[in-house]
Image (cartoon, rainbow, N blue to C red; front, top):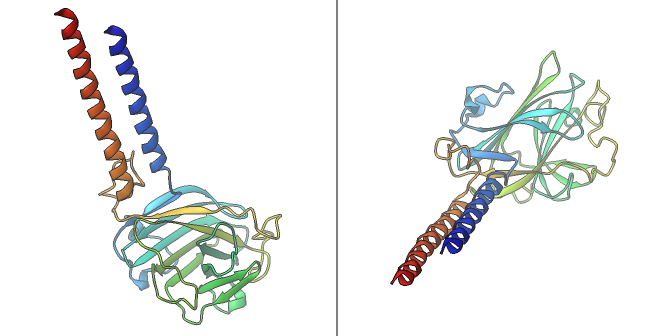
Length: 270
């Protein structure tokens, strides 16, 4: 009976370890967590990252293409996706781009946002879509609101308010929803093609951009307060249900195992 009890104890421990491993895996499933938060008025999308981002998910040390380390804020209000980023560059006149969706940089028919590109005669935000490597086109209908601000120390601040579903299929705009995990790419440039004053190519040493860092983004239906357990920062409803089911099975297995051991022990003593 002692051997059987030991076996049950070891099995239970392994099951619990497996459950915690699943929890950790789920918590790490997305690079960025766009928590449900308060809407930001267009007037606050001005390139100055302030308290309006306090209820957003914040990720630090984000490696950008082709270089730099950024702070990134992400959230949603059920209608719009909000993204802000701050990082230092080598010029006072860079451009910054975000591609929404895809598995690599500058994939054809992907949605995008462009900030500070002089070729568009707008020193701010342009709603774009990608036509393939080297091709970025301004949408006929400009959806969303964006801003870029570069300080005297070359610190770049960008803010973006983008509809989760604008309905603009001609502009290849995203059609995303809460509890989905999507992809995005963030790149910047300082030495040409709409930027100046620096030495950084947005493609680094790779002209075809096939080494771009693709990030994942969870559009969370929970606010930070609702998802406040730091062990479960990126949980969606489906993941929680699965994990709850696993834990129930573990508890039932423990109860049944203990009862069976006791029953066998009782029979042997009779």
